[in-house]
Image 1 (cartoon, helix red, strand yellow):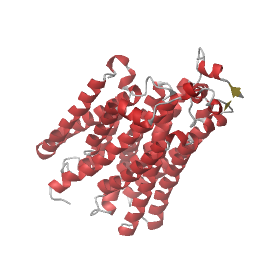
Image 2 (image 1 turned 90 degrees about the vertical axis):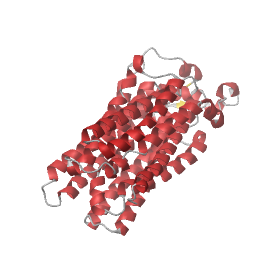
Image 3 (image 1 turned 60 degrees about the vertical axis):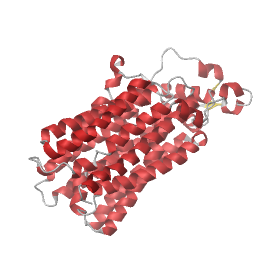
Image 4 (image 1 turned 180 degrees about the vertical axis):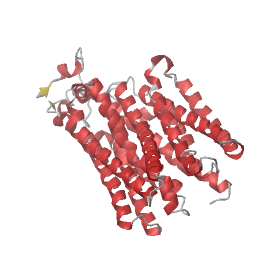
Length: 421
């Protein structure tokens, strides 16, 4: 099947598959972070195996540089990268790495030691590489489709945290009194995560590209000069000649450079950077190591992580209500900067407050993180052509990952300041 320019540009009266696409995007978002959130959520298990190595902080610090460096390379080459191969490579790497984590624990019988810790760090580095492939690729791809798709994908990212937290609480309760119960719960947990990664490979490879609404947006992007969607269109049985006629349609296929997009959207990029600098300077390291001992005991950190993930998920659906969706560039910047008031709040609550106040603070941390993330990522790409929206989506994810890395590095100040290093 060949689609010419006229049929690409004309919008059909009804785009079929929108709700199916939202469900698939949600599951793909889940799969994009379920492996990493699994690592965060089973932190209590790794603290038992490696009590002297600060696993929550170290593993996060290993993950982020690989994600950031890989994403920087991908952003630089974004216009020439096959999006289909990029995303499938990322999901496959997630699947293999999560399975390797399971195999490593089975092979070593859950033993501690420096060698096993290094092996886990290597797998976490692979998670970082996979995250850069998938998250940037998916956000870029969905940026030129309807806003509901990217919102569903971002909600899926948050749902991975909420789901892993819920599963962790269930497995901890189910196996707490069993012999070697903590490890058994973790094994079940990792097996479920591996299954979700395999499901994402199948959905992205065989279901998503064949939805009518996805075909429409990708053929439209191809007509506007995008070269990244060709393989996805071929997978859907569509041949487009738009990129081959670039010379004849030079004016139509012109696009802003990454540098121009960067400076036109520097406030949005800074918003995402600062949102995740703040969040990762508190979550998860501070919540695991700096909140003291309370009545909940070993459940306390797990409950805090679960509360954060639940409110982060809820907040990502709030922008669906247009009346309370923040679209003002100035408003987004003010809201982002105001979140830095959380730092003294968390410090004094950890020092003088009880667990109820900490749980409330964590809920607000998750609520503001999820809400502002969706607002920025859905508002920023509007008004650009397909190839520009794809490029801007990748730039936004690059700044998000830079914020994550900076936040993880700053998180160490909590324990250095307390003399616990």
